[in-house]
Image (cartoon, rainbow, N blue to C red):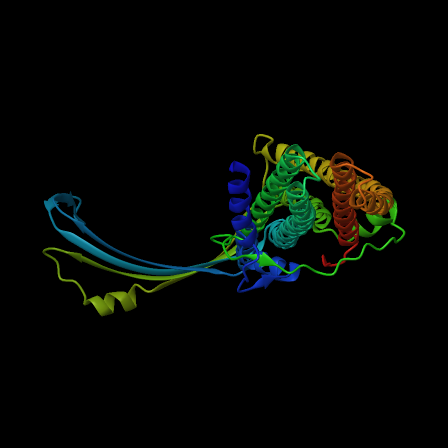
Length: 439
């Protein structure tokens, strides 16, 4: 009775995934949506925008500055008069000024800072591409996991179908006294185990769906399903790790970002060296003021502003002589930063090569496993057909039948796993060489 209830409950669960979905997502749909909504990509885009602002700021530093000022002052109490005596007087003054300053020479600091910010912007854009590539690979991996779980669930369904027919067959044989109750109970137990295997496969499928929808930043996995493409495993010759790396190192954004930063260290050194040079600036100003003292007749406000109007033009030269070795230490620090960045570039290149090696040898292992498991599946399928025929003719018992069936279904699962592992790894190698991720 308990087994029958379990079978009924699982049958209800089985019917749930077969409900039609409003939309099915292809791998391209998932990748495009992730590019628009993934928070990591958006965060990196904010960094890129900040680098654009930094570049604009450095370019605008060549422009003249312009500032205006106005002041109003009041004075009360005793003060020195023009007769060299003290008296209680109240005075007020109003002044206006407008000034500008233009940097003429800054030891090449401004052009080097502009170049540095240009390289920082390029590095930031490359970082954003790297973030996108990482999301693409994660989405593709999650997509393949879903395809794999679908195949495993289908294998489990076939197993349920086979054992359901055997339970029905043995029940009829029991009624005709050609099978024992123990055999029927054993087969029902096997069927219940098949349902449990399917439930586990279905749970894995739902978790894989959840993983993918989280990568896409979807609010809920409910109603989400994917397009199951026609997949063929092409036994093509894999490019060697050296060949893949030679193509990847020239196009991968993580390499380009570190190269831009390395180029930027040259400008950082030049910026530090700019403090060794004199700096020259031009300045000019316009101004006027109004002054009034209590007890004295003063000219009108407008007349004083006209009479007190003044102009100023000047050049300012600053020559560095000694700044407590600050410039020298800044230059040395910039050179150390350059060496550190060179090491970072080398580390990034080695990491890329190691990733490619791991993907390549994983692909080789998956291809070997797929070929052997495919051969094993065909052999176990033939063995299962022969055992089924023997079982139908009463020349084999139910235990032998189940062993052949389980061996056949296991070989199917192994073949499915190797197929998707090989598919994913080969697509990854193509992606490293610059191809788009697609199935």
